[in-house]
Each structure stands twice: as C-alpha cells, then as structure tokens.
Length: 331
Ligand code: UDP
Image (cartoon, rainbow, N blue to C red; front, side):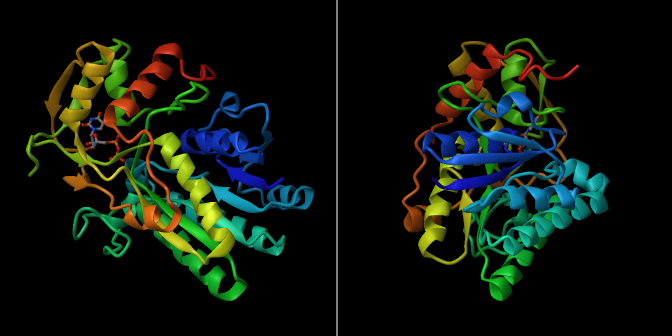
C-alpha cells in the first residue's frame, strides 16, 4: 500500500488531502506542529507525528521509521499581510524548512515531492486568466518564499533526480462534502468563512475591501476552488509523477467571482443577509486573479467536481453551522 508523508496535514488544505488519500486506501503519516492545524482535523486512520519541521533530528527519525512513496508538503506560514510585517521570518521558515525537508527526503530515497505553492507567485499578473507561463513576480515575501522553494526543488531535480509537483493554489474554500473537515483559522482572514459568520451573526459586519476596482461591480475578482477539488489535484499530480517528470500547475476553477458575488452566494445558500459595509482597499490586493488550469486538466485529467460557487458556499456553510467553535481546541 502506498504511504505518504503529509506535512501540515492538520491544516485546512492538508486535512482535505489526507481525507482524499485515505479514501483511496493509502497510508498516511501527518507531520504537524499544531501551531495552526488541529489535532481533531487528523482522522484516526492517519498517524499523527506532532513535531516541528525546525526539528531536523525528529524529521530524520520520521524518515527512518517509515518508507514514503512521496511527501506532500503543506506546512507553511501563509498569510500575505503577516509576511509584509515579518519578511525574514517568513522567508527563513518557509524556505529553510521546505528545502531541508526535501533534503532529508532525498537522502531517505523518497524522490517524489508535492509542494503547496500559490497564486501569490504572480503578483500583479501580466495577463488573466493566469497560466503557468505568466511572469513570476511575487509582490510579497510569502509569495517570494514559495518561488524560492520552487527554485530549490528545480535544483534538486537537476542534481538528485527529485520529481516534484508545484501546485499554485488560487482561493481554496468550501469544506469536505461529507462534513469530515472544514476551515478553522485563527485569526480568520478569508472571505467565505467571514461572510458566513457575519450572516450567522457570529461576527461583526463584513468589510468589503474596496468597490472602486476596474471590475464590473467594482469589487475584487478571485478564483474560488473547492478544497476537495484541490485535494484531488494532489492525487492527480502524484499519479502524474509516477510516469512523468516534474510539473507546475495553476489550480483554480477557471471562473472568477467578485466579493459582491460571493456575498450574494452566501445570502442565496444560507437564506440570510450578510451584513456588510464598504471599506478601503486592502494593500496588495490585485483587482483580478483567475487561474488558467488547462495544463493540469490536459495532463492529468483533473476536473473540478464542486466548481460552482454555490457548492463551495454550501459545504462551507454546513461545516461552520455545525461547528460554531470550529474544531473547538482554542481557549
Ligand atoms: N475580502 C474582503 N473582506 C474581507 C476579507 C477579504 O473584501 O474581510 C476580499 C479580499 O480583498 C479579496 C477577496 O475577498 O479580494 C478574497 O480574499 P481572501 O483573504 O479570502 O483571499 P486572498 O485572495 O487574499 O488569498
């Protein structure tokens, strides 16, 4: 039975990938320091190793204890705003941990690696929809940290024969349709959970960050991709790596939705108003970020099954309504 190491498997996207792997009958070892992830997000069928990637000895022990078919590396600092305040911390953690992890994996003979990368690689994109050949020009240290990791993996490919897949996520949202996992960040900064919580009266009114962009309704357009579809993209990438060399894929549903359209979807699905007001723009927000995922579709056969915005909102709403305190492990 294939066995996978999933770093950050207790986090939002990681936990959904763990479910997808387990659903296929694969064996999963999760490595997570639980700084942002949740113990309860790791299913009993997976083994949880509570450890920090900074602990090189512990990471080496994990590779000595199990033989892995591949590493799926989700664990990272991932907030754009925080990275603008602490650039060196972001770069040191994300780049250092990722490249050391790859090094240990290679030494242990594990030559397949799937990296959680990001649309933030593209900064202000030179064209939309954004395909893999668009200019890489991150406008914040978070995006740049992922660019550096991708480059490090490319060297490992040339020199050590590592096969890697760099998956550039656009806006992951929604939750497992069977209700087994959901989105629980602290602090929560993402639009879909904030809009739902505002509708449920659990948070103050939502602030829309600007309505004077050059878009049809003036609010920013993003490409929301269901987290379970995103998880499936990891399995598709793993299959691809069995027979092909390294790959880099942009992953989105291919259609954009504005902030106002997301609010409309939450109101439609939830049957409640989303109290909101218009505020100033958020620094660093490009007007439109939509992925061209044609390469992923053509090369792996991946296709989003829950691509409609209402599916994303429906599953996110169901989980948040059922879990008012999220995973319930915060004070
Ligand atoms: N957004 C907003 N109000 C909020 C949070 C987000 O208007 O309280 C907007 C944000 O400006 C962006 C979109 O919603 O255009 C998605 O933001 P999110 O933080 O969810 O994801 P990002 O695009 O930053 O990865």
